[in-house]
Amino acid sequence: MRREVLMHAAEDILSKSPLDRIPIKVEGVSSPVATRAGASQPQHWKPSRFNVQTTTTEGWLLLWNSYAGSMNAFRPAQREAILGLISQRGVTTPSGGVTGYLADRGYLVPRDADELRRVQYEFGQENHRTDKLELILLASEDCNFRCSYCYEDFRHGTMRPEVRGGIKRLVESRVGALRSLKVGWFGGEPLYGMDAIEDLAPFFAEVAKREGLEFVSHMTTNGYLLTSDVADHLLSWGIADFQITLDGLPKDHDRHRTARDGTGTFQQIFDNLLRMRERSGDFTVVIRVNFDQTNTPGLQQFLGLLQERFRDDPRFNLSFHAVGKWGGANDANLAVCGVDEAEAIRIKMKSAARSLGLHVISGWQPAEGVGSQVCYAARPYNFIVGATGDLMKCTIDLDKKDHNVVGKLLPDGTLQLDKDKMALWTEPAFERDTGCQSCHMLPACQGIHCPKIRIDQGRRPCPSVRRTAKLEMVDYFNAKQVARADVSLGEQHETRAPMAAKGTTPTGR
Ligand code: SF4
Ligand code: SF4
Picture (cartoon, rainbow, N blue to C red):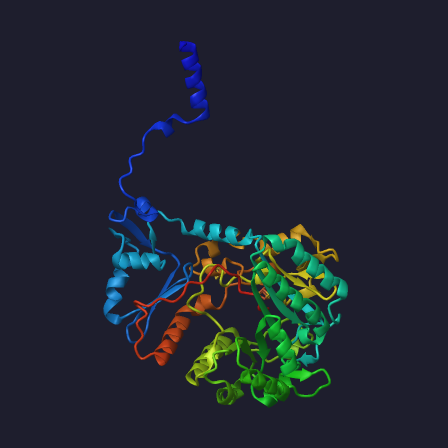
């Protein structure tokens, strides 16, 4: 009998933990946060190393955190108190109140938080995602324009049928694991390859609907072929976000952006934009303005022209970019602006456009947080697919640099990838760069704002906002003051940026 009991007990502790037999006292339910942190217990806080602060001429304290993507403006009377709470001394207070608010916004972090490790974690989370697929499709590698600063070589025409078949099979094979599908149409000029778009775009829309995917589709087009009929089709396929370039007044634009037969292109694009504006419905157009020393003097007058037609229509946004020597045959003849000069022009033009009631999106936005300044080329789920099935990463290098051609899309939908080339583009570069590790922009940029610069030149590819963040914050704040007589961002908050790459809006042109 005794042996039987012992055996029973032995079996029991082998199949069930004795700790599970201890009764659990239930003393009321508390929230997980309160249990962990102790809501009424004093907490030790330190300022986030990713805070950026500045003061306006009227004495408002502006705070931005490049991890949380939060921005606040505190009234002059609150300034000293807030600065005291976020000083390097740290602060010990119970949770809640102003301290809790500052912690919630990311300006204060627990004293033992390792913020570098947090960025490493966020990088890993994003780069190992298998539920996202982002494709930048070169519907045609040829173009009906020959712009002065273009860097492409127009060696192929419309995307081949077997490549389109491969894309469909790739998407079908991945769709079970996907939550998000982004498709960017690029070229050459994508609308020059309308056959490929007609073949693929309805397919993407149908798959996304059938599978309940988050679906975003964007097109970078010169706008020349974007007639009403074409726009009808594109919008019906969910392509609802366009980037179209106008480089200033007609005479300036036509000098920069000439058709391949040498004729001007401004009027046709402008007419197409006006017809877009007459539509009702939900779409966005970014009017990109590339400036250099030749067209800058006319930009103020050009803004007046845009104001007449697009003022107060939030679907049309302006974005200003300095022309660069992007690797084209005409680079030596370009009158590019210097770095500081370009930055000053960009900020001036943004301000001028806003004061005319135009919407501006270029540059820094307060909701930019983790990953927001990372180039799409650095993400393993993002591929450019060329007209012949080449898989590429950088939209400036395209197939001109061997290391940018990371593989081939096979007709059966297989991504045949070169692991070393993929690793080159998608590495966590900041982990080998002590300068990045101590940078206040690290969460947003992660040292891979432009992997091409790091690869080609072996230097840090800092985004310009690293130098201009304070100016941008003041500019943003002033723009809000124009829009609202009573700005009370001290209590009001901006939305936080989701973890995201710079999007599928390709750079250049
Ligand atoms: S940001 Fe740099 S790496 Fe990314 S597409 Fe542009 S040039 Fe290429
Ligand atoms: S590349 Fe420049 S801005 Fe980006 S994290 Fe490194 S030092 Fe900071």
